[in-house]
Image 1 (cartoon, rainbow, N blue to C red):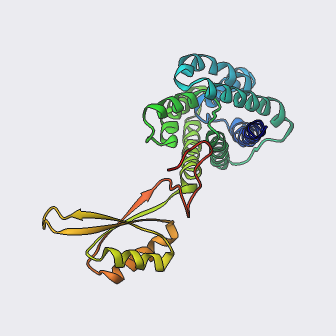
Image 2 (cartoon, rainbow, N blue to C red):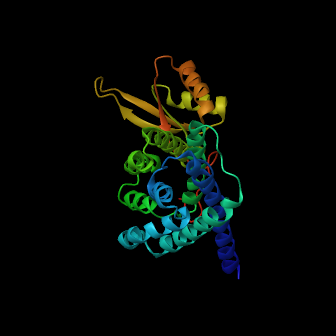
Length: 293
């Protein structure tokens, strides 16, 4: 009974994220990009071009263009991901073609339209991605690539795929500005996606090479209440033993951590690295379905 209730809660959460993400993405595409006269990239960009040339509905065209990509990638991505994405594609199609036409579109500055289009699409796609789904199209290619190379940024992959579609906007719209505004939109989308997907759990990793490992660790704990990890290391030039203090901290704590380390050992070597995501006590809880320990 509990398992069934949990499964229904998960499905309800997935649907809620689908609705919110598809609505945000749809507003970016239909409300801002369509009237702005530029392609946003991906299959939605292709659908905007086709809509401009022949007046076909954006959502339905996007769904139709998905078919060959689904056939190419469904084995790699698996049945579960495919079924989730199919639901998301249907939801986004209904919202773009039947819900958003009931609302007015933005008819102001094309530059503002491009910026808001990218921001809203990036936010919407991030919500969808975080539930392990996609809107199909280039998303399928992105997720397939991520299976092969998990370290690659979602945003950078999306930007590379979008570039070719955006450039098609030049002959389609007969306006080189269409490509420039499309690039603005894609850039905003990339930044927002990476900030939401990675930035929400990002922080800093501070590495301190010192002779006073225990004292530095205690000073950091006193300054920011963060635990540290001590690792024995050896200097390659001197051959002398050292201690490396590893401390994961938030962005606004890094100055205090560095100051605490240098207060104890002014000669300490301090390295501050980006940590795209940090899971565990004091940071983000592990995502649903992940195991710890």
